[in-house]
View 1 (cartoon, helix red, strand yellow):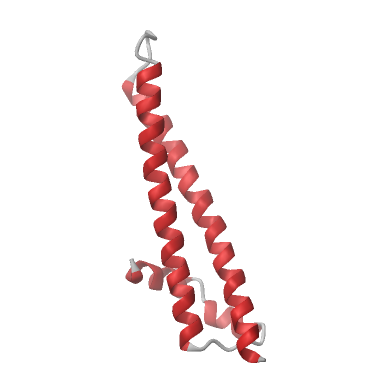
View 2 (view 1 turned 120 degrees about the horizontal axis):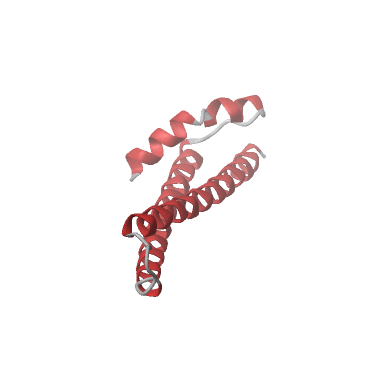
Length: 110
């Protein structure tokens, strides 16, 4: 997971963005940010998996007596909502990680 988090942080150009704002990042602050990104991805992935399972099984149970309800429809709708849930959680956590990074960088400058 750390490898994935390092790729995400590298693609975000965090160091350049922080340099433009006048902050320099120490290795400790950068490691904390990578850890936060890793936790954000893991939380989004786990929530997405749990929401897919509960939505799929719930739809399967409650629509078993409805004629014309295909299994592919249940699968597609469960996948869509699970992906959206995962995306929204990861986005919120990544925003929180960036705010924490800025706060830590400003505190280390003082």
